Image (cartoon, rainbow, N blue to C red):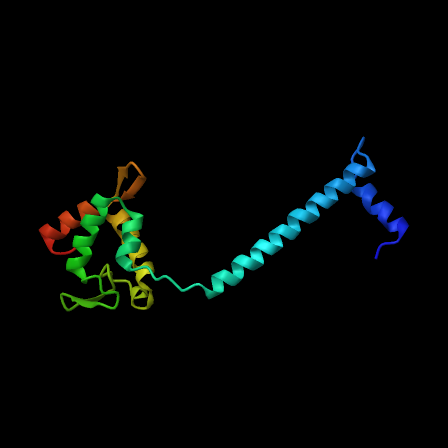
Length: 156
């Protein structure tokens, strides 16, 4: 508990020139109300978050959320042919290299990555190899160019 002297020093530190003690008390009271309200709402939402059921998102839904319909359609066909959207898929590239995951990449990191990480990796790979295409939503990986390459060469 602050004694009278400490209280005066604390309030004076908050005061600005031409600011009355009454104004400072109002400011302190307002801050206390805001902080108290914030704590009440954060505790309430935290308890709701812990009891709410977990919603899982599929790798297809995740990819669809990243791309326009046209780009998603090309990616869906490409990954459907490469891995059947199986995140544990392992392929053998001409007997020389193993390829892993949904994007069937050479990176061994893909073996241990979750499906959403694999989608992110695959979209970065397509961006790097085939470039980006301008869409209304912004720049996106040119998945249709990757699909076209796959149709011609059997790989992307």
